[in-house]
Image 1 (cartoon, rainbow, N blue to C red):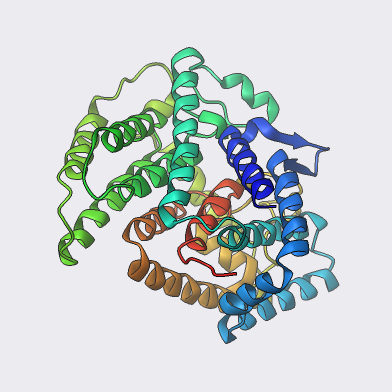
Image 2 (tube, rainbow, N blue to C red):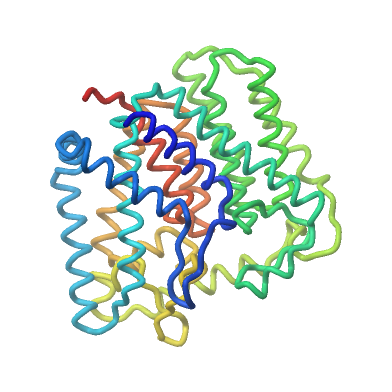
Length: 386
């Protein structure tokens, strides 16, 4: 059975690297990823083989007053919106997938009791695959404006990678870079090569949110290493410095997207967030519209399963989903997760902060690939004894 889980894990990681290439659109409303099928199979096998152990883990991590309160508040919001006929099945599907990914991550150390370093290596390999595919696309297919007819943004001379989006590809490369810094205690050629490749692949995304996340995440690792008296990493500051110096000299070929001073996307994000907040009324400020439920400017619910139909800012997303009370509970949970990661692992803590920074400009935390990556990093920090 252990071999089965190992093969499934490798398949899931391989599909993860393929990103949107393995997306299957059933109709205008519903889509899924091929890796979702294998995660479902994984969870079925886990339920058969490790049911009692999984229940103990669920109890350990999620049986607490704060989690109870959050789940109760989400349920109240969903019930109210169902009664008011403003809830869709699409929202429920998003919730089911988020829970499935969470359970998959929770079961990883139970089914494959690898070391933290081993898990990190696997995910770095997946990040490297994303980087290589992205660089190949940037070199040989820089004009991807034809994707506009498939529902994606039209990009020109930007690295979009397998995510078909420079921002999400950029943050995946960023967090891969950050956890790479913890793979070896001392700098070596392999670590330096991987770091330079990942950092170099972030630059042609022209994703300013990813640039900020990369710089602040790297600076955080350097700062924490200093205050905790870790062995100093002399290579990371050099890579970060070269990254910053290179930004002003990035090529500026045709296209608005390569202009770092562009304001159209910033204005669009601000207007989208403002529209989301203005559309809230009455009880929705208290309980929200329901998790993963979003209404457009016209007040009509949007059923297209695309992260573009959620607010770009994490705080606005949580507020519109769960109201002021739910937002407060969620922020407390995020703070406690941050405290836990700070004490347990500097590099995953830095990646967590980088994702939160990125989520102020994009719907990052709950983007399926980011959510799968993040939960898998957090819940494999402790070794589980069966």
